[in-house]
Image (cartoon, rainbow over all chains, first blue to last red):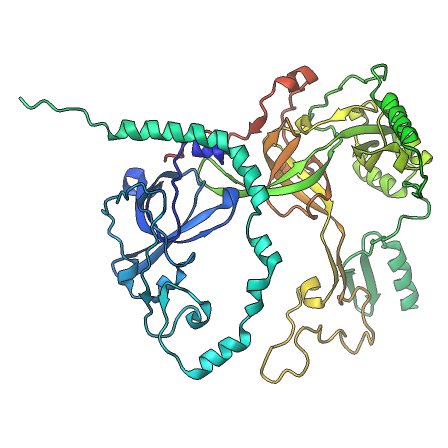
Length: 215
Length: 357
């Protein structure tokens, strides 16, 4: 993973950020294809880590899942770095397409380096039913669920599992404990330092524009 | 006396699992769904391997003394080290395999952008424990039959993996390892080899026994699934979930085969114990070898067994996957100079630039 990161910069991004990914594709003209989209999902660990980008092209929703360490990825740019109220934006599939549409020629938006990632508190409305999921049960904070019949909520209450929030072992299995995190960061620290200096050097090189003769 | 003949044929074909039933105008060949060879306890004629552990209440000095005795015996510089006799692959010669542990399943990208899964097999601490000459191997009826089919004498090479503290084993078991000069091993297995491929006892076997690009066969015990029903065990279709099916959704249904037989055939597929059987997986390609930790990356994720289970690896028997040119001999000095990771040319190395078409 660290060896792959010496070849491509995998920037910091979260679910809700808008990314542009350039992939080498044998069938595309120019052998590369670029896709812009909002990251709706991040799954997997290690070499199997993936991200799913969503966009609406010609009134058709399109989602592409990219393995982050796939060697055919040439470039990953973060056009808008922000977080949303949820860690999973799959509800955008049942929302009006305007909330999933991002222009392909979108310019990268540089936020002031305040150190904290801005959280977009937008609440997205749903299209009328049928939906791909029972959103009235999902408890998504960034979603406006319309009022449904009483029996929907009764059934939701019957199948709900409210004890999950007290399940410590479940949380332990889902996340990496702090002690292990410290170990991992200590191992990765020296590599990350050298990587960051290399990337900063490369970024500065790119920004430099040679002066043109005016006369 | 039809039933008499059928019983005789059953006994004769116990190993192959085939049952030939001849009656009236036709001969029907029925295969036993599986040959039951599960043994949960060691056979009575095997020697005892582990000794009964009881609290001996040794003083700390005595315990330290025992550890010293063990280390003197096995780590003494005066101990005879047999020359590392490297054995490269030679077409026509059957050589021994390796005992490995299945440790992980990791993805690998190929240079054409394809994503594949590879199983990591860790070859830990393999030593040749002994050689079984053809005359001794010939005493086994099963081997003799196979030998006759191949028209050449076969020998055996006993390989042990994962050395352990000798105080845990019985004297009888530990004495098997005297010739090799190693501590008794947890896992002991025998590979059938050509007599030309014999190795001296005590030879250390490493992952470089194979080369990247070789095809290997893997022999391991499948995962235990316990008592399973007929749908999972034999792939029966079951019955409909609705449309009036009364209390019958995952049952075998009918087990008879008609009025003529008036009985159930032996080998009728029924629920029972599933898993925990030795199986062969043939023709797996080696994509990468880590020489530092002795790990073989094999293409595919269907290697039988659970995490850390033992797996036997040997050159493939598939005729179209066998290499025609002999392998290169790697001595100990050369092995020390090999790079840590040897990749197949088809594999994309992460340190290399991104794939461009």
